[in-house]
Amino acid sequence: MIADAIRSLGPWAWIVLGLALVGVELLAPGVFFIWLGLAALATGLLDAVLDLSWQASALLFAMLCVVAVLAGRALTRPRLQPDTTADFLNRRGQALVGRVFVLETPIKDGEGRIRVDDTSWRVTGADRFAGARVRVVRVEGATLVVDDP
View 1 (cartoon, rainbow, N blue to C red):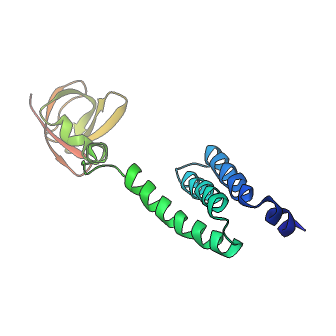
View 2 (cartoon, rainbow, N blue to C red; view 1 turned 180 degrees about the vertical axis):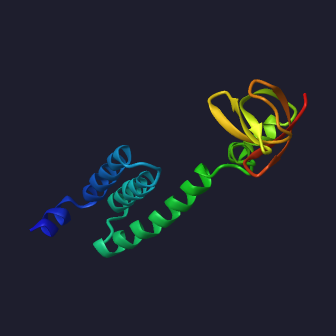
């Protein structure tokens, strides 16, 4: 019964499917269904012009899906630019080297803490009292090595 209804629509079935897939793109995250929807719309238009059998139009749709997805990936793929955001996030401590901060907790037995904006960093260096000014000289993992300013 449903198959008969779809066959009676002819090329309009592909157009309706294409519009539905484009509509799904609005609800789904990412950019994927738009390419399938465009492939279905193109299949419907070619089916209307060439009067294809359902087997030929299904094969055409499959081929157009592959072409549309590959073309979409080529269009939406970031160009060959380095991702500076990921690099910055993985090396935040490097941006602190050379800066002077006030100790949040005293450095006892070589360990203490400083506050940088809303983040507390573990520091190592010579013992100092809380409130002393220190300069970051290098980063070792997630620990900042400090010295006199």
